[in-house]
Length: 156
Image (cartoon, helix red, strand yellow):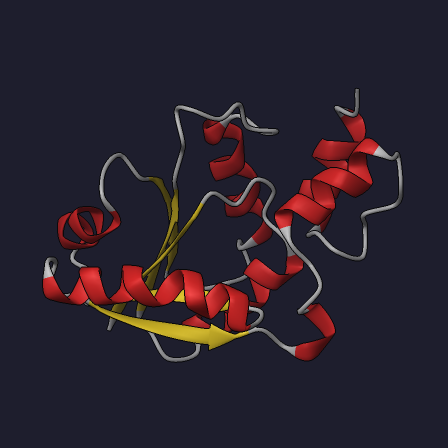
């Protein structure tokens, strides 16, 4: 099985890492796809996000981090992925992800599996990390060491 784990990962959190580790237990190959939204100015440049995620997942076998250029379903097909995986923290995430999963299947012919977040990580989100960072709070327990180093060293 080849899986695609898409997201903005701005920044990549321990919750994201947990999903990647769990998917690696069942997939022979995992693409972590870093998406960009041209309408938003991100915290971390997309190329830097790729490098940080590569460092954070270096202990995992079969992981490749890539920049996504188009629709997730099209990128999955381009990469040869047979499955899209998404982490979900709550019913709010599920409500947001459900229509996307249906379109991925109906239009793109690719299934989506939701990986429930472990309860200890359910409160961790990229937006919460950005907020804590802006308040100059310690984020080390919420992000992989490579991400924490980068964000701490580049704090405004």
